[in-house]
Image (cartoon, rainbow, N blue to C red; front, top):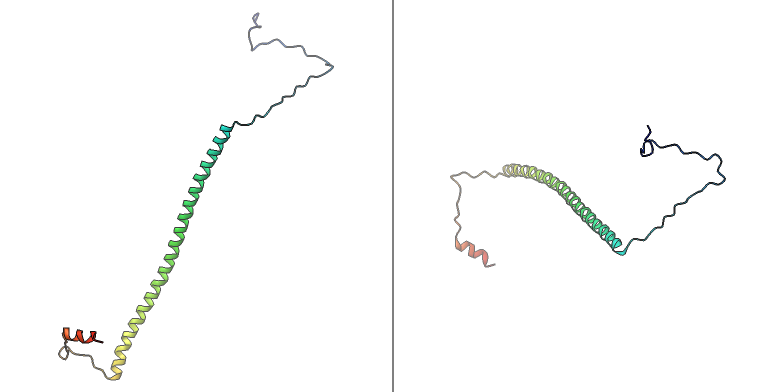
Length: 132
C-alpha cells in the first residue's frame, strides 16, 4: 500500500476548514445566442412541410368521410325506393284482379282461341295515323 498517490481510487483525505470567514459563491451566467438565419429558415421550411402533409392527409380523410356519408344516404334512398316498388307491385296485382272481376260484372267474356281476331300490321294503317 505504499503506492497510493497515483491511484485515483484511493485518494488522501483533504483537511476540512473548520470555520471559514467567508464563503465563495460562484454564479454561472449563460448567454443566449440567437439562431442563425439559415437555421431559422430550415426550421420554418420543415414546419411548413409538416403542416402541408398533415393538411393533405386531413383533407383526404374528410373526402373519404364525405363519400361514406353520401353512400349511406344513397343506401337509405334505395331502401325507400325498393319499398315503394314493392307496394306499387302489390297495387298492380290488386288492380289486375279488379279488372277481371269488373269485366265479369259488366258481362264481358274472355276471348277464346277460336274467336280471336288477328290484325296484321300494314303500312296503310301506319300511314293513316301519321296524317293527323
